[in-house]
Length: 221
Length: 331
Image (cartoon, rainbow over all chains, first blue to last red; front, side, top):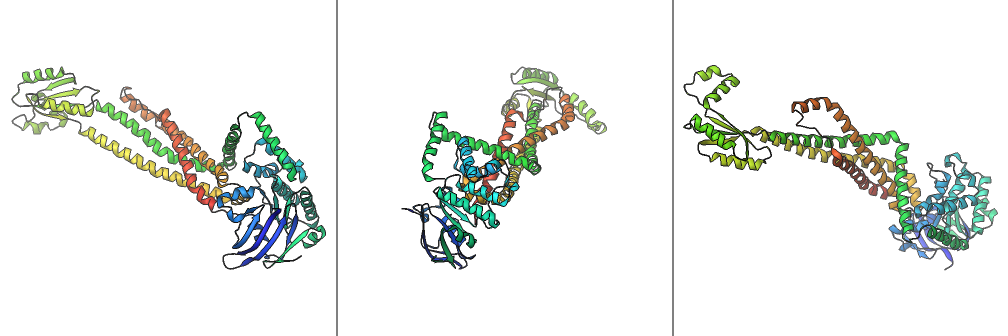
């Protein structure tokens, strides 16, 4: 199976009747990078949440890296999430820990040894260009730097899929372009990436595949 | 980040681990241990960062633990005391009226030679009346009586190391002696003391149970607030794939520390109480000519208090944390 993400006729209806996704089928190939666009409320976040097993589909099938998510039991969710790299609009860093400790968190969760952790954290920080800031606390960093820390944390455990939900939503255009270039570098190194974003002009300049959602339906684009 | 670079680096890491630790089992076990040890220290660090709030919680736990522990010490001291009083028990043998003074004295002497008896004293009816006249102050009233209403008495002090049951058996056999009308143990006050002691003992248990429940609630509530304050952090951890056990661990260790520090504070409080009571206790001990020694919790008692503190802290946490953590899911 070469698809890293496969949605088959996925419907998501929230309690209260709102239909967020209405029969979505899509594929993302291994090593591919795609942008997920659409107005707010189009279902971008819901799609991301289904992949992260934060929500379950009402109907239809989601297969990630060959695993049908319907078969992942609640107890197995942590282990499943460990193989994803999640990036958030508000960075979701822990402010009582240093940059190093934030990036190390996924590895600590997996129970790796000290030496292993230090080596991998430095490699990830080097990738995002923040090696010199490892002893700083996130609160002392700029928004762009904080997001780089978030990205380093997402890639430190070599996920098979990077999911970014509005990663540049809080950043100015220049910083946003920086972050997008970082994603492209990561993709060139082989990581599959799906980015939900509002920044359509930025996306058009990047020239990658675009998946457009409109009121829970997929548009061809 | 390339998938191709994944495999070589990981096996390099494994080789590395194998070099430092010969046993294949040692590596995960050591990782598990060191992660627990780190968690133990980290949770102490967290308490230290909010040291005033933590200290207040621990102090409340300390007071709650000190009260039953203090009662326990009081009780075990009273128990020793009652045993020394137990030795002062006397039996009174009321003699039949037709027994002469000589016969009575001979009987007292014979009884005094028995193994179970420490000493025996004969008090004639006349001497008894004199004693009563002096001690009661009813002199004039007694003068009005034509006859001496009191019988002759032999007081018996049983051997000091006899149990209550053995003393009871002795009493029955003394009652069977010829010339003895009735044998009585003047221990009604002792029985009352034992009754009071058992009331205190039962109260100590009840108070102990109630305060243990209080400790559970205090720890539970503190941890609940702690979890609420760390809600975002917990959500992030869950998103990164942390298991419930991983997230729960630092909170359980906080419970451990609260219990341990609370128990240590309880010991300090008990120590302060002893210092405050040292003077009157010293006077009491001296009045017993040193035959009575007050004692504290003892080494075992200290270990027990620390153990109970830790167990309550841990349990209070376990009872709260699972339910609270399950309620926090990333949205």
